[in-house]
Amino acid sequence: MTTVLIVPGLRDHVGAHWQTLLAARLAARGGPVRCVPPMGRADLDCATRVAAIEREAQAVEGPLILVAHSGGCVMVAHWARQTKRAVHGALLAAPPDFDRPMPEGYPTVDDLRASGWLPVPRRTLPFPSIVAASRNDPLADYGRVAELARDWGSRLVDLGEVGHLNPASGFGDWPRAELFIAELSHR
Image (cartoon, rainbow, N blue to C red):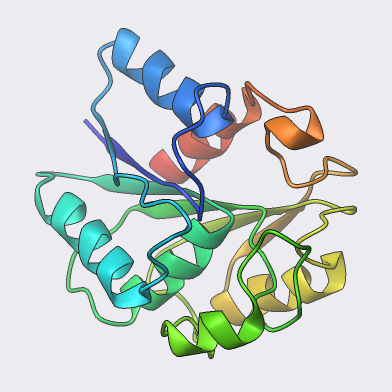
């Protein structure tokens, strides 16, 4: 059975976030699911976060699908460059544009650079992936996310105007994530 590994972004645990709700729903149905522990915004060290993905991924036996949101998408791109772990696929939802200044309350470009996030990896990912992008994400212009998807070799899905696909944008549960997981599982 395929294990889903949830990779959160630069946030603390949020009970109403679609990833949290997805993990609970999958677990309630007996599906194998693991979560990379959220590390909040205080410790921005990219290498620490990549190591956390590696620990969780290596603890899984059998097929693995990653489900990342926001900064978690960039973490996955960094992790993919160094891991030897086979991955069945990845859903990368609402990746931010770390090369451009983000709204107040988010790390600066200088902070991200100093913490090892930049440059954002642009090589083709070594596994199938879907990038789900919003037309009005305050953390990334749709055109810039489309470039990331192209560079990563990902299938780009236009979600319309869903903000950053988080509770602040009016999103909690996101059932469509399970459809993308099913698509990746059957590849």
